[in-house]
Image (cartoon, rainbow, N blue to C red; front, side, top):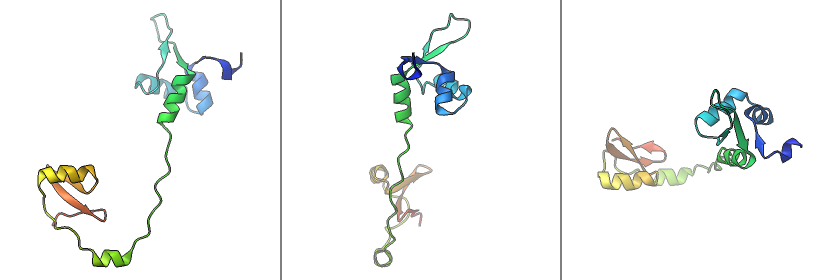
Length: 120
C-alpha cells in the first residue's frame, strides 16, 4: 500500500514528510497540538496519526500574508489632532481596547493614535 493510501501515519513518517525531526512531531503530540492514537502496550507509547488529523493540524498552522501597508498621508497627519492623553475611563478603555484603539498599561487604559500610546 502506498504512503498516500495509508489511513494512519507514524511520527517518523510525518517527520520525513514535513522535513522535521521525529522529536518535533512527538512534541506536537505531547502538547496536544497534533491528535494521535497510542497503540502501545503500556510500556512505551507507539503513536499513530490519522491523515485527517494531520491535515487539520497543518491547516491550523497556515500562515496568512501580512496586510498590505498603506501609504502615509502627510496632509491627514498634519490636520488631525491626537486625542487627549492620560488615563481614560475604564469602561470606555475596555471597549476601545477591543477595537485596537486603546491599550491597558498597569491597570489603566490609554488611547492609541497612529500606533502611539498617548500617555500625556
